[in-house]
Image 1 (cartoon, one colour):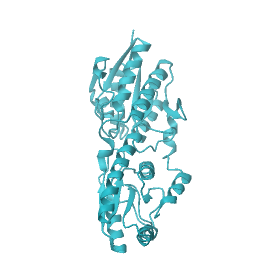
Image 2 (cartoon, helix red, strand yellow):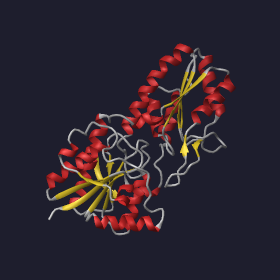
Image 3 (tube, helix red, strand yellow):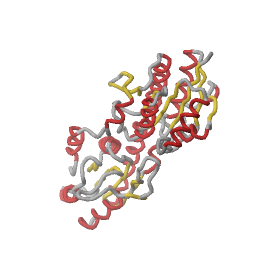
Image 4 (cartoon, one colour):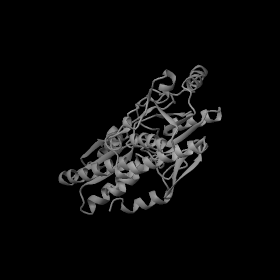
Amino acid sequence: MSKKIGVLTGGGDCPGLNAVIRSVVRRSIVHGDYEIVGIKHGWRGLLEMDTSPLSRRDVQGILHRGGTILGTSRTNIYKDEATKKQAFANYKKLNLDGLVAIGGEDTLGIAKKLTDDGLNVVGIPKTIDNDLMGTDFTFGFDTAVEIATDALDRLHTTAESHDRVLVCEVMGRHAGWIATYSGLAGGADCILIPERPIDMEEVCEMVWRRHKGGVFFSIIVVAEGAKLKGHEEVLSSKHLDDFGHVQLGGIGQVLGKQIEDKTGYDTRVTVLGHVQRGGNPTAHDRVLATRYGVAAMDAIHNGHFGVMVALDGKNVVEVPLARVAEGIKTVDDDLYDMSKTFWGY
């Protein structure tokens, strides 16, 4: 009798999700005696019994596509006892022998709790922010960096043409990986991240130094979760999602206004927003996502549950799901300090 394995995608969408789904299905065919069931819209689909079988034909032609054919949501099945019991009951009704949960901190946090409560779950790390503990890189990050870098390349030409300061706000709630990598790759003159409170005097001094040196434009990259020294995060909405998160956004506008007020230089702001996690994944993310899907199905086939597949150097390995709960993987101090080599010069 074949084993029935569920697969779901939770949290924000991310380039590479379809590549993972495809590889789980294709690897299950190699192992044989598996039935793969897609659970729609993340954990919400488990509560609503919203599922669809996934065959080889169902995943044909989706490798290069962005988004997720399964849909996603930010549903928290542990928000109260009733939803938790419903999720457990539905897991049993679906006759699942295992579940592949593809997601970030919140989705994999739920996966860890389900494992602790006795269900068979394997996690796959997904987030464009690259802030998950236990893995060197998450899929989706490379695509987000490429998109942000391309935007910075384009902003350079208009900034230089008009002698303007241009502030580019990128994603990054708790960690500034996208800002740091795209800022370095895109030749930003200043990179501001959540890990380091923003010193406005230092930022303005950088802008002044460039002008005094005869360079009359500046490019500043700021992560959405960055905050001014002595201030809280800037919010676009105080509404809380199922996991208690507020919606960040607006630090770019705050920063741009203060720079213009303090320096007198024409300053404009660009917010990349959701464009960073839309569209087709890069070749790197397609390959990494594919490797993760294969490794997750291998873990299930070998009876290894309560683990997350992860990248360790060049190798895809299995680490305990508990690693995700250890905190946020923040930007390395050495990397960020190195980036300051290019500030204002």
